[in-house]
Length: 307
Image (cartoon, rainbow, N blue to C red):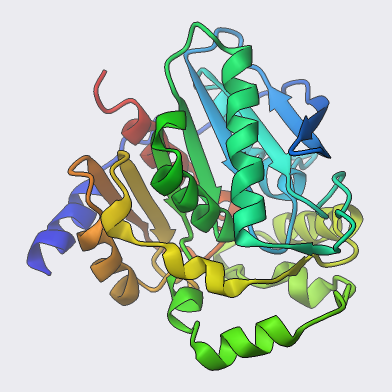
């Protein structure tokens, strides 16, 4: 445990380089066929592309509210922040999210989503043939999809960032939960709500204008919640099968990624090239909370650690 804590504390020592609000870049929208399904894929290009980053959103909300949130007073777009640092960034709406329709089953599953992400990575790589492998970034449930990718298709990415890794949800999967999940037949298609969209914020660490803008974007892009099934497929996740360089990053008050439960997970990641950053005064949405600058720097420093 002492060794793990030392890694956390060392990783917190990042330089506050990115402090100014970045200029908004043009959002390029693609319609891409992956696994015989049409997906919305978004791109923001750096003026001079040094690195390529692929973003995977979480269980509830699609790409644009999470990764390209704009305010008139301040640009808090994740994609613009990384574009200002020389990253060309791609984000996808998974099946049923944002501008991507559901498939005929009405359900998404871990295996289905991971397979779609793998095809997305191949599509992005073909657009950047002169670059080395891509960096893969997964947020919340997207970090689980990203882990499946590096376990099954490690050749597709050079690094993986697991942000807000929902270890508490994984630890709650038991046989009763699996039986209840398998008994579901029709997708419930529950309507989104203000309460649902605002969950995960630390209100004292996030301006009300940011929360309001995020909730408004969520209700606009994801008025109906996507339905997931086959939680038993998460049981194949195993940190001992992660050989890819890995950054684990989370807010210290994230209820879905509690530090005490993440510590054993981090210690079992097989790759010796790994780091864990815990951001103070932050929750599950640290990327658009007050500590977002520290969070951006931590991710960039890891991805460029060998330069």
